[in-house]
Image 1 (spheres, one colour):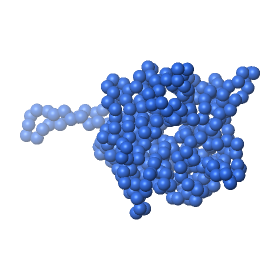
Image 2 (cartoon, one colour):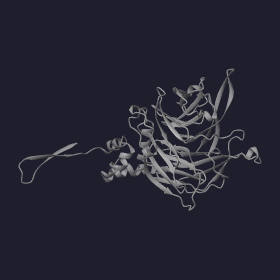
Image 3 (cartoon, rainbow, N blue to C red):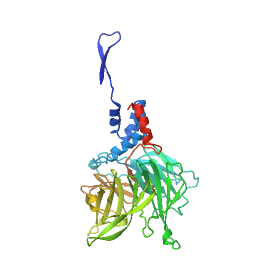
Image 4 (tube, rainbow, N blue to C red):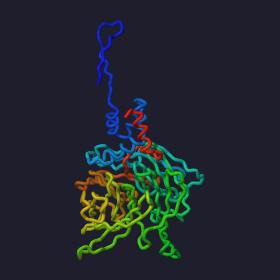
Length: 424
C-alpha cells in the first residue's frame, strides 16, 4: 500500500490520498470468499478487472468448490428453489426466502408467499397442459435438474445466472411418469461436459424382462445434444425412483436391497448403480449399510457421497433417521469407509413413513413428503419449520448450493485468460 501526499489547489493544508495497490492474487482470494449473490449484483460493477474475474470460468468453478467443500456448516450457503406452474403453459422459478439464523427463529409455517419470483419460462406449446407435476432429478455445480410430467421435458437451470435449458423430446421414452423414471444430471470434470442420463421402467405385461428398463443419454452442453440409447446394467434390478448424486464424475443411484453373508452374519446391503459420466459405463456397488430402497436417499455433501436412511421405531409413531458419509470413495463396499454423521428420532407427524426424500446440512435435516418440506434440528429432532406448496399450483421445493457457473465455461482455457487479465 502506497500513501502519497498532494496539496489542495489554492489551499495551504495537505490532503492525504491513499492509492491501494492490492496484489491480484489477494483480490482473487478475497472475491472467492464472497457469496454468489453479492458478486453478481454488486462487486462485478466495481471495475473491469473484477468483472472479468467474476465471469471467468476458472474462478467460477474454484469459487463453488471452495464454498461447497467447507468443513463448517454449509447451511448459510444452502438455498432453495421452488418450481411451480399455475396455467400449465409456463414454469416459474422462485427462491424461498428463509432465515439466516434458522435455528433461532420461531416456527411460522412457510408458504408460497415467502417465495421471491426470479424468472418465468414460457412453453412453446399453445395448448394448456392439465395435471402437470414436477419431479426433482438432482443438483450439480449449482444447476438444478428436474422434469415435468405431461409436458415430457427435462429442465436444467441456474437461478444465479438465470441460465435455463430445456431438452428436446426423447424418442426413447414411451411416457413420462414420476414413479417410472429415474434421471440424473452428471458432470465430467475432465471435459466439463454435462450429461443427462435417464432410465425408464416399463411395467407392461407384454414387455420381456430383458427390455423392461430402457436408458438414454444426452450431452447438454456438447456439440451433439441428441438423445442416444443406453443399456441398463442388470435386468434383475430395477432403478429406484430416488434422486441420484453426482460425485467426482460418477452418478450414483439406489436400487432394491439384498442380504449377504459377512463372516456368517446377515446384513441388509444397499445396492448402488454407479455410472461413469466420461466413459458412459455402469457398475454395481454393494454398500454394507442397512436400508430399504424406498427408505434411502443419496445426496452429495461437500464433494462426498451421503446416504440417509429412515426406519420405523418400535412404537410406530416415530422415525429414526441416520446419515452416513463416505470418507473413502474408492472403497464404498467397506464398512470402514462410512461414518455415521447423525442419528436422530423424529415424531412421524404426517403418517407417511418411507415416502420421503431426505437431505441434510451440519445443522438441518430436510424431509420432503411431496407436498411439504419439513426442517428439523439434527441435534435434537425438533421441528424448526415447514414449507407447504399451494393447492392451486403444481410445485416442488429443491434445496441446492448456488454458483455462477455457466454451461459454456471451460476453466482450463479460461484460466490462461484470467492470468493474462491479472498479470499473473
